[in-house]
Amino acid sequence: MANLSNSPITQVSQVPTHTNLQPQLLTRLFLDLRGRRFEVDRETIMNLPESVLLCLFPNGLVLSRQSIALSDGGGDDEEEEVYGVDFDPDCFQFVLTFFRNASDNFYGTATNPGLFGAQQHLFESPDFSPQTSQNPLLSKQAIIVLREELEYFSIPPKDGKAATDHNGIANDTMLDIKRRSGDYLIDKRNIFTALQRNVNKENNVAEQHLIDMLCMSGFDREDEWGFRALEPSRCCISSIALVLLKTGIIHHPNGEKQVEIDGAQMATAQKLLLFWRKPARKCWWDGLDIELPAVGDQPSLTVKLWARRVWTLELSLV
Image (cartoon, rainbow, N blue to C red; front, side, top):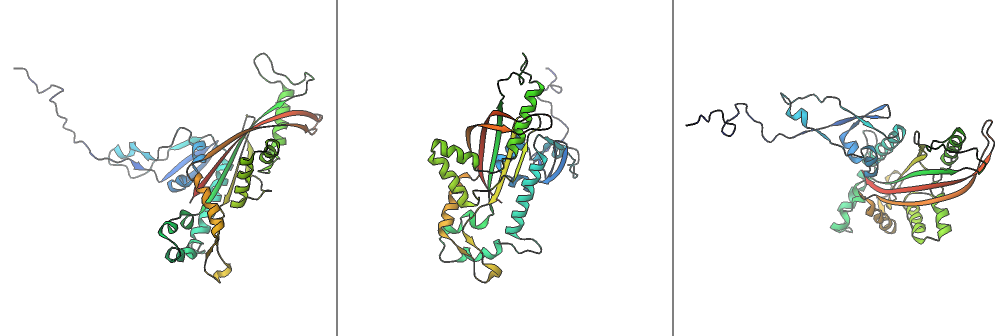
């Protein structure tokens, strides 16, 4: 009879196995954004807009560390693991600061009671049905997130000075025109100018409705982008604007009267819930003949400037 004691089928490991091991959830993340370090707690990351998270982590983000859970002794200390992220650090700081201030203003701090405390009676009012009292706009701070990715293309004068070689590499004159075009666009900070120009040209009712809805919900028609910057080594400008959603919840000065609700404004605000966790995108082309001002020994010149704009609209609840 064959000796089965060493058979791989019947052999039993003498090392005890661990069952039901759960990966340890990260409590904080260490990020390296183009050479600048950030330490961000897990809750802050989870509260960020989905459209921003997709830019930060286009390949996804794992918020657990399986290796620590399976290491000898379980591993109580969280080792520093730095995630390299190709995202503008100043833009990231702008978003973090806005969200932190919005949260502190709504939920309160050690020295500031916040707005949420003054709204508690709304949930107990007989005027509110169960469906109304479950309205997330009553219990969460809502923030409108509007992003623009702008790629631009400069068409130089037909004088032959600006050109590319047989490999498509731009010469110094062409590079100078691209840089000056970027400087021209970066100064155009008004949010709605380009879209309104497109509305006027195409008579697009839907686009006009979008502008009107945003301006009724927190934006102003003369608002500028909160953050706007050229991407390194690219003919691309990234912009973002964040505003608190106007929900129609009215807080009177010094609490002299109880909090009230403007029903019409709340109804408008609830339309923005369509964009909660569901970013919507709009893309259009914009072409203009522009005059680039003289810079140094470079004379002024007229170029055709095409811009491909992609807007992303989202609602975040903090």
